Length: 436
Image (cartoon, rainbow, N blue to C red; front, side):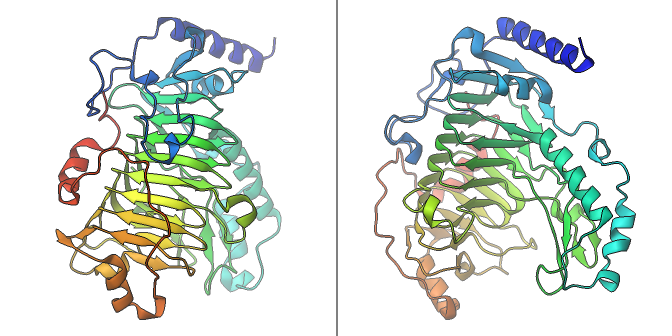
């Protein structure tokens, strides 16, 4: 038997052993209708709770047989559990922090790749800004990136629940890929945005070039009925302010926190913390994707806490997106672009959210117009005051005049809270470690 086969066999035996002895997840939090001692891994999305409750709703792996319930302690065990054959419901309980890059970026480097040589070869003073990079070091960078890609992505199949055990479960260095799947639940995880070890220098990106990176913390791609609940998504130990600069541009190693793209539909994201990140949450990834996205990208965002985010909270294309009862905190001195991005054929319905803005950020900047599309924005509060977001935007930025009236009214909602209560309520109750 080969070394790889022996390792796989050991991992499989470990999974089966842990599965047989695992006890119910003990979580702590807020859901009022949950009985003491109930295994939260088998909880389903409540009826009427956002777009993911449409039709048959979202049940994840709640009906998993005992042999399809896994408790995992390592990234390798986690990916093995996800890859187990068949489409039968499965539950994966994450214990502790799973580290997808425990051996560092060096483990992915192709032989001969030298970052110092990469910088020397593609310095704009040498290469210029008119031609995309090419040559031996770019080829080796690309090969290194492929190795990382294959190691850090975890593909989530249909009928799966992934749930953290206790208050300190999470993932670092990895990217959850909910791709071509239906009926998925992800709860109670702290997910640190993965660092791209090998960003590509693109001298043609903008006037002075830019570093471009891959890997979102969570991607929902061509998938339906997905519930993302009570997670904390963050840059964590590696905020953008800690990243170096080369060629006068930030060596950007982050992409998005949560992207919902490529024809995905019926998604609810609730009671999450999304914090300290730039390009935060994108719904629809291309203006040219009407063939796959038109009539889809129906997403509900409620009771999420956004703190220290720069933009895309969310940016929307095509979808009917219901954003209610979220709290958005812009920190003094942070970089800030906008909160809601209005994109092609989008129909955003933003109601009863609250915003905390520092003195240097005006309410007119909350909205950003990318393409002509109407929206509804009602009952929102900024710094404790009722604010017509569209009116203040149109007054402050008349060149980006926005139309009022999304043309639809959300019906799939449970309790709608007073916006003035959101800052305190979500500070206490949103994020990982807050469900029971």
